[in-house]
Image 1 (cartoon, rainbow, N blue to C red):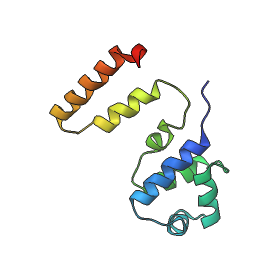
Image 2: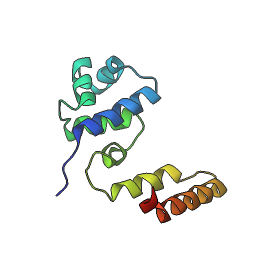
Image 3: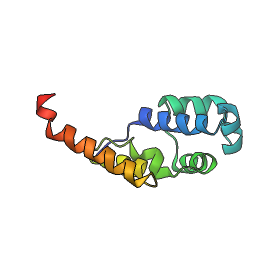
Length: 111
């Protein structure tokens, strides 16, 4: 059973918070948490409850699964993450990207 990497989870929370230009203080205030608690969660030194994770994800307009996606140590998640990143992008550019990835994969042993 995979474990959750709380440091990676905290980094995703920090990234989403900064992308929305919200301070730790403001996020804590909205979620009913102290600024210090938000800081601990972002550093991975405190484990957020499910309720806290839901409140944070709601305020940051991201899903809980997005926050957890790279936080679970499972190599299959990388493909899900790549797929999500490409979703809604320019189709021609996605095809070029995938062609490039395939070419690199074909030569990976030579790199």
